[in-house]
Length: 593
Ligand code: PEP
Ligand code: MG
Image 1 (cartoon, rainbow, N blue to C red):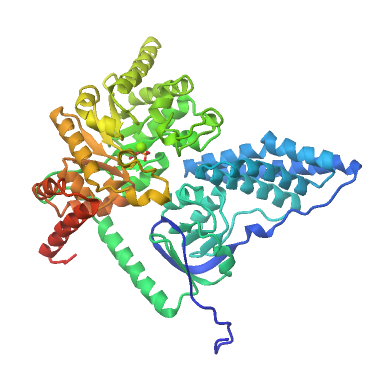
Image 2 (cartoon, helix red, strand yellow; image 1 turned 60 degrees about the vertical axis):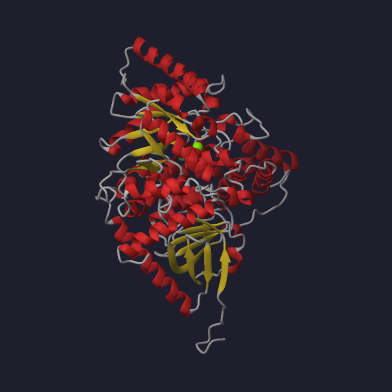
């Protein structure tokens, strides 16, 4: 006991997966989701129909509740909106409802128990799948179960109501809960479950709430109202921090806030090097609802719209109008700034409902993904539908269409044949589109990088997707933790490929952008400039820092630096050389950093 009578609780540190940066200090708000259990008892034969009616009523009530949440979100957040629609569909899924009714009838058990068993059956199928993305989707089934269960039991299902600035601690959070937590301006989020692709992570990042997931047992360690620190950049979580620790993190929080404010103040400054070369910094987005943030961080355009999220966040395949409306929305919200939409890049770790059971592959990252899928009988109708939507949108404002994962000239030509067919259809139907619409490609595999000179003759622009280019150059699965040490943006092999693509693009007067994550690393961006890249696209939050660094360099210096680093044998050597150059700049400017 402490002198004040409280029980002394030591400082505890845990480390999880850092998914959304920033430091939060606040009191724990424990979401006791796992505390409600489904009661189990048998029912008499004459009670069976009543149990089934109870189940139906609880499903209808759950549907209405989700509809309300969805309507509130409709105008603000499209991705959350789609996720909640998917949950509504699950409520009526025959595998769930019919199976539960079957258990009530056949085994004469109560609705709660029957529902639990039906959910367990579905979970067993999900759990058997090795893919992390799919396993994480099993939590969606649990969210739906819990909502029906609460309605069966007459327990409150309203939105979570943490006090302002609380740190929400949960086993897992449903997208509906997470979206509402954002409204309540919580300070941080922590979950036992989840990975980088979990919805909690996606939404936390989009809303800039510091978050750490995959903590395994944080709900066991924390008690409600415990003082906590969340470091969303390192994944460190501290429960009951000592006074010294709090002081240390408050200082760091202030430092980060000040640094962030200084960086954000460059929002309206051009990204121009000291010797006057303009570098264009664009944003990568998953949908129109991210545009406000992109502009706020100083993006001068959208360099990559990952349109596949339209397929991933809904059970329904998007129709032509959906593609059209999304593209027009992006154009409108960017108010005249350039916009690039990539045709859907599904497969490997990005899955959609319509692919379920259709393609089973031993090596999905090397398989039927992306443009390859679009050129098959399975993908072509959806590809054409999307192209019709995008072309129609091109009449509305400037947009560029980009094909992902092009391996070489044959595939580019095949994709363009489909595009021409669609254009011809539109002409016949007298539907307007921009006849001059620019059509470019992503360069994300060595075969494309090494034939960039040929591709440059037939593509209007290039965008180098280094996330995949690293994966395919280094033969390292980009989502496999065990080989992540090989996932190295500054590897000489990668730098040589980028330099080759930039050179071919320049020779043929083809604009070239880098849109992989490495563009958003302020230490790496100067190297890209030195290799001849003057356009980059990145997560909007990275723009201020990258711009800050680019404004301190000169193109002539970084070109000289790159001429040297291209001959260095390892990524570490390259990193040291770049760090020395940036340090030197810092010292010249009197900051010493
Ligand atoms: C890339 O591969 O670098 C890229 C931007 O595309 P994605 O991350 O969507 O595969
Ligand atoms: Mg890619």
